[in-house]
Image (cartoon, rainbow, N blue to C red):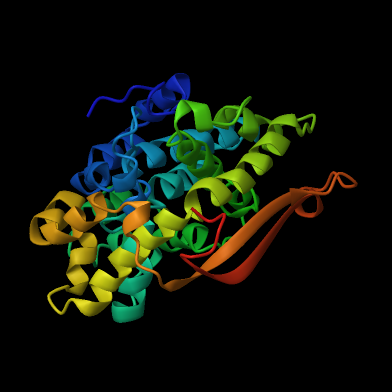
Length: 323
């Protein structure tokens, strides 16, 4: 899979710098990291956008982008390599444990088996997962403290640079929202969308500016409204979760499979996803978290300026305005 920086939404110069690091390159070249090429970024939702004339993305391209943004943060903050390597490795490994269909199926796996992509990632890093010790061996070779690395991923690190991954606006969500926006058809897309690297420069650079961050926060509000909480997309996620919860042939180790392998075993699930149409959705109520993202212009502090509200909600498919 050859990366196209424009198509795959990754800064070309930062990607070249990332590949120049032997530690980072070994992680990227590992079979476990390569597995992410076969994990769709939006999970079940990806199968509803397959007819759009744009690139659908993987956890692989998302992760590479997040790592380049972590590298950019390191440059802006003038981190020494000993700090940079922990931040960039954490970025490279933050989604290493994602299951087939990504976030769509994960709640059901967690409910049934107690596994999440966070716990799976930690197992992969520690070398205790069904995928083996490949990543753990690379980290050991470069004398990476696994406990310190997992602390970063679990948002328990006291390091100042941890904010790049755990802040209310961070390199993971910056790429995630920009990437999700690319699923919209051209006529649906928002105007004047900033590049991810420009948002990072504003967020962590000096002097502090807010133009790109404001646009990003407004975009995040729209993405949750127009894609993530869209009626048909919530239904698709629900279909995949019901599959895991009701099918006795699903086993916990399948969480570590590629999507192709999962599809080979459960062809009928993917056929059902591909056949979903708004008019075919049965009338049933579903729970979801309604999210809103607003800006309080009175403040310059990030935590006070950019507000997030999550409201547990229920909608039935007969409700207007939720298609």
